Image (cartoon, rainbow, N blue to C red; front, side):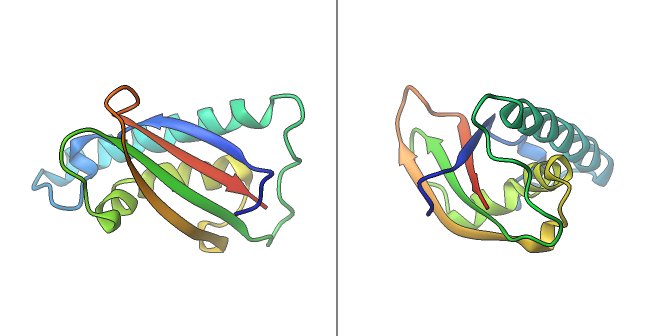
Length: 125
C-alpha cells in the first residue's frame, strides 16, 4: 500500500453487525446507522488534520486496508471485513465517493492485548 495514507481508528463494530449474529433486523439497522455515523465523523476529523491529502476526485479509486486488533482467538478475515461494512459506507460518505470505487488491498489481524478492540482502516488515493 502507498506510504502516504490516513488511518481512521474505530472500535470493533457492534455484535449486531457481525455476519454470524442472529438478531432482529431493527437492532441490526440501528447498529448500522450508528456505526456509519461514527465512521463518517471520525473520517472527517482525520481529513481536517494538517498535511492530510485533499479528498479524492469524483470517480477516483480509494484503496483501503483493514487492521483488526484482537485478543484471544483469531477471527476470520472475511468476517472482519463484513462486520466493517457500515464503517466503510460512512467513510465513503465522508469522502464523497461511491463505495463501489473503494478497493480492499489487505486485511490484517493483529494479536495485541493492549490495542485489542479496535479497527484501523488505512486509506490512500
